[in-house]
Length: 69
Image (cartoon, rainbow, N blue to C red; front, side, top):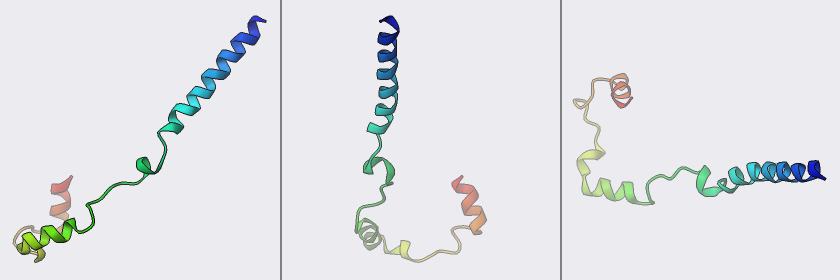
């Protein structure tokens, strides 16, 4: 009788160990969110100077990548 109740407790703990991580899985957790539709275009309309790439801003693409990390 005692081993049966221990088995039930272990079974419940096993179920909880699978149920808790699975409850966090879903559409909201897997997809990264980007800017809202039209947000980039609205920004570029407010700041038209950002549309043109300024060669004087950065020396090379490698320098930009190093600065970002």
